[in-house]
Length: 254
Image (cartoon, rainbow, N blue to C red):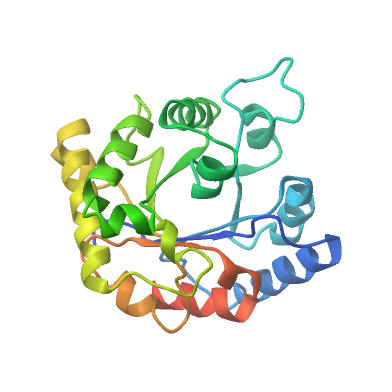
């Protein structure tokens, strides 16, 4: 992990939790923040959208930010079931995850849609966490770097800077499976992503952009992964649903 980039630990709760679960989890995290004198990293949790207000209230004043798991590419209008990025920002979201593999595979979102959503999130004043990643089939075919390059260049918002964009590498084959990319595999992909960013937005800005690892990071492997030169934190799935596990990963990034 580079000393020039502030670590980011983002918890993606996915479609999990009811009101009591969210309150308990968020309150637990808020209590753990009490003894932190100066936060040396950014922490964000992304609950299901109906729970955003409740979680924001439970975390108020703690230093932990909230983010959305998705947003519409439109600001407002006749988009039944979608959520406006302006509304998400209005209720307290600082970050927005776009292009998660589950959105790409289950909902059929392509790079063009992901890019539009990222640009919409940024225009609303949020930081876009743009996800990329290969399937097991693509990795076995030797197309991991090529796949991530294609997704990155197709999904990268036109106004991308280190202040408004984060990249999350999530090997699809490692999400929720317990499988984890080796440190060598992880660094290889992260380094290749940064190299493409250099070409796309220039060296100075590319070296300031944070690239997160998002494939089954847990308290046992977090420190080793986050210590890699081009890994600047994690996009945490299952482990973010337990305050103790999420906090252990957070401590690994300090």
